[in-house]
Image 1 (cartoon, rainbow, N blue to C red):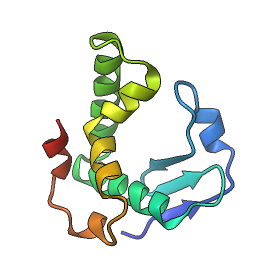
Image 2: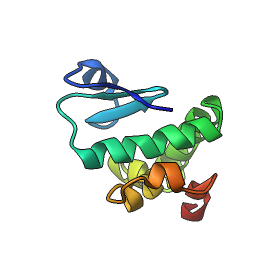
Image 3: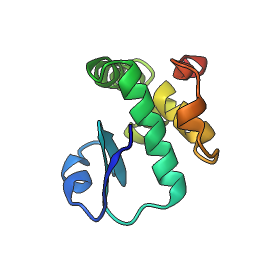
Image 4: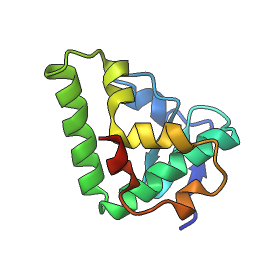
Length: 113
């Protein structure tokens, strides 16, 4: 699926409750505060693939639960909890790779648990 890319949006600002959000993926949209570079688009496309394989609700539920786990039980701050999420670990590990989102194996984020 080709994402719908929205740039120069205020939506990330409004959603920046816990961390400062530059870009966010809300299937099928990739929404950014400013102009996205190719690396950011690749990163967000990985999240699109993760969201699709978990039928959206599974992704958002796991994302929130893991973030709370890292915040509450591990005592991490908001930014550290965000970077500890397996979804983010996979996306950051592969956002320099062309076409990774299209060629990754299903549930590849599990390698980062």
